[in-house]
Length: 176
Image (cartoon, rainbow, N blue to C red; front, side, top):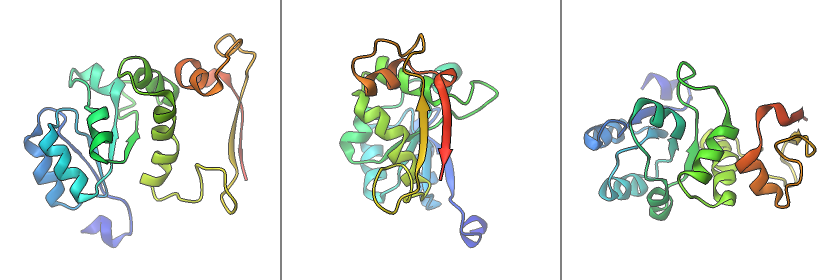
């Protein structure tokens, strides 16, 4: 109630150890659920029906032994999925590493991974004026070094960013 009065987003961790706390978390009417690592299809249907987006944190869940969130099932259920890094005590705040895990280990399409980490993330946070290139949106741009050891020779730029880019490939970030 306090968070809502402050007009802030309310996010809560659920389904990380098991699925027993998902219904309780939903009863609090969160804006975002975090993890759902151990959610089952029935849980995902309930989350989808409630229209609550989910943020997954794959590297954190591997580090803690929580497992792999059923991201493909979430997407199939119609849940908007974003990506986070979770806990900086366990992992660096590195979205490039999260993208690589989602692409290579989870087997998700690179375009879907990129969308989850950009457009979906902005949408979950209520930042509808960033994340996409369209008239009226803010021009927040990241310029990557295409000649770096990570990106040199990349033939598919999107796949190269998702699978190979690293923070040290960033040349500049422009906020307009």
